[in-house]
Image 1 (cartoon, rainbow over the protein chains, first blue to last red):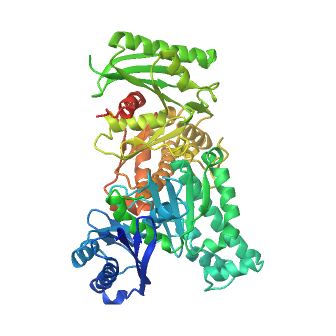
Image 2 (cartoon, chains in turn cyan, purple; image 1 turned 180 degrees about the horizontal axis):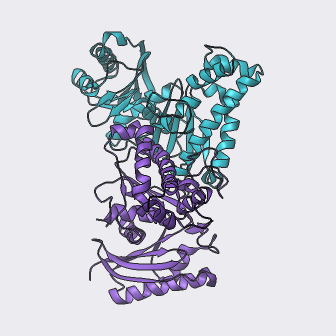
Image 3 (cartoon, helix red, strand yellow; image 1 turned 30 degrees about the horizontal axis):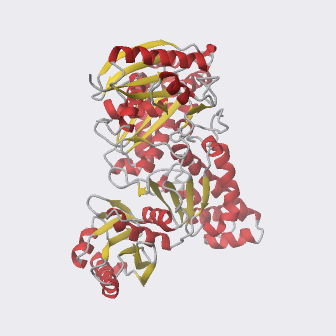
Length: 308
Length: 308
């Protein structure tokens, strides 16, 4: 039987697991809702059940390992999540070791945006490069940085907190204590807030604002233009710092590309001569929600030195 | 004879060269003024003469190679400098290959701030870490990023253009085409400009503004405070992106540390929870002008796999 690894994506809404072989073929996939109210022990039991199910189907001997992508800051050394708004109750819970002990397999824990960046590098829009940055544009904004084919972790595992780059020094307040964080000016939540400020409606979702923009509403278009400018400032800074060949955008805001991308590119071009003098691509990621699963599954291959 | 390499620092004012052994001991050093008016061929002749002089003293057989740090953007693949305001006339000149051919030694060309960052990592304030960022605060602001003990280059060699990070989106205009670049708000030139705006004098050097601040002048102190805030925004973004253990500041502005550092730290603390939750140090570099020489000399050792 061909070797495979299991990637797990632990989100606030769904728990997904996939067995993927080293060529990136998905052999089997499981998805179920995450019941966070039952507490971390119960969630771990669900993860372990999914791992066992896949292992029973595909053979225990061929399993290289398990990678888990989870929302929140991962303290790599301890294998714990800390301060995750999407996974309440997991603070300092020994997630990696619990899954490992109860499933009897080695486990690598990774931040979900980092896993998504690695997935795009392995099987997505970043296959041709060794270095890339991914920004996930959802209700918040996450980031993942791949250097030399590997996730950049920094000293404790908190690298690539790109949603908290300052793009408007005296901008909107953020729960992190800062003002003007990228995610307060360019996330779905930020688009909703700006729509409200523009008098478009008090509780519009980003999708509804998009629909208004698509119907020709100028105020809705301005919202996406301002969002694109904020993204452009952040991307210009990233391009100046990294000079990487590829910057990818993913997440629920991607369908609004046509409305935010022109302002974004204009801003990057103006603010970064590195962009103007290098073959830099800023593009849509292509794996969507699957990126995190691929990246999580790739981690054990990479750790074993058997990544393709 | 012990192996050594030659580090060359090619600046707009001085040309310096040093023979350094693999333990970082400086065996011999040469310094002479750079005569840029004579054109790049003449400058190369001076560099080659310095290399020959050191080689004659220390033995050709023990020379591992030559590293050259130069101001400007280095296109790594071609070994040329491009768009250097400090080295006019060198645009697209085949600097690396000319030095190599005329001296008969392999040459590695590197940006001067990158070389300084590597020097601090090898023999300076960064000896204990593998990952660091250096900001050189002079008339402009340069940057160098060390990842895993090596210079981060990006796809063409333009990584770490940190002086051109946007810190004030609608701030002072910059020659790069942007507004609000870090170096227009936190360099010696920016301090002079702010002193003028504060009515302190039309042509004060940063050192004169420092002397005013040291004498208790509140306006001069405010200038450094604003400079510190700009630096703090940039550093917060870098800390959030890299989560490295160490960020170093060097350059002619360092003596003003006491006046800009408090505002800088306050800004970083507020704008970066990664800083608040990680063992991050922001410190003075310790090698001063020598950093670039050390880094340039280290390049051949590193390329030969013989770095300590």
